[in-house]
Image (cartoon, rainbow, N blue to C red; front, top):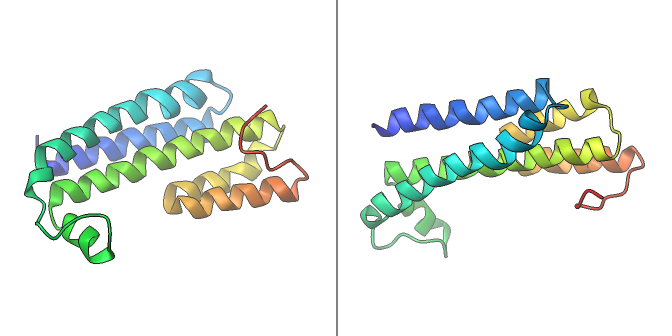
Length: 146
């Protein structure tokens, strides 16, 4: 399977999870099972495969200690793809948390949808937007749903 095929499959799988969060937020499968377990596990397995299969191809000066080292690490296409899959998995996981948290605080779904969009597109900014919405709605800022 080519890296381009893996990219397309993983991106499509993540979008499936996001569509469930937006259009089927009351469904246990769309809210909890797919975006919090099934899809992240599949993406995680793909990530692990790429890291273990292609990690040895990283240049000697690559690593995580300095920006130039990360740049060198991502010069290997398979490791760049692993980084992309990392984003896909964690952003979706945060999106699922946003849905569950917003539902536990009786927040209007249509107000949360823009936060989901920004979490999909910009990760941490979308999460910050949700936390701001939550605070402006007078809800507690606890990060664990009660």
